[in-house]
Length: 251
Image (cartoon, rainbow, N blue to C red):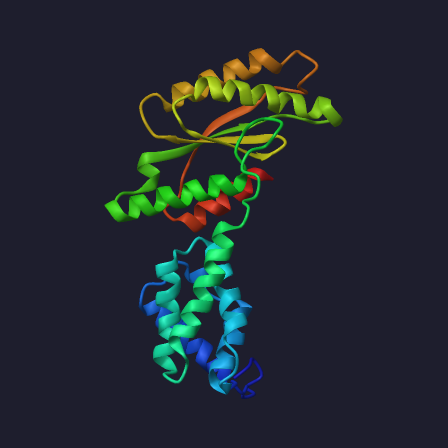
């Protein structure tokens, strides 16, 4: 019923989608907040009408690959649907989903490095965060105890054009000097960069050194409008929360 007490009809396809989603949650689908995609509605409608499942199956496979789901996870979720509707040609649907997943996986990747600073893209940082959270979960560990973000925010007030870009270019060079042991260095915006680094006894000292060296390179020169901010940002308990933190930092 809606807020006025009126009964709202649920179509058979919508009912099937709700059953599929609930069963996926029960079986441990790893991306519950991102489970739904319009391709699912198309698959449900085709499944109940004995329609063509190939096109929506391919589309769902591409979307699952873009989400970061493995092929095994993706097919296990599709199997939930074929268990619910035994008349669905399971192997055909699995092939369509697999093809879509593979097409997305081998597609030319988006640029992972900013050409001006040499720092990684936000998408690459998100990928690395996903790997770190998955590893921690597998080991029963907490990411917040093992990793943190070192954040650099540059004051660019009133700067335009090349002059606006120079502070971060110079700061990126300092980042590579201080964090030279394979840490992930990423550019979130033209004034914010982060380092995904292991938490250890040196981290806060490295952050302080980073601040001092960036000040030495930029403040008082034509490159910067003010002193930079550098701090250590603790990572939250879940990957989804970490993505929100990164989004907030980029603003």
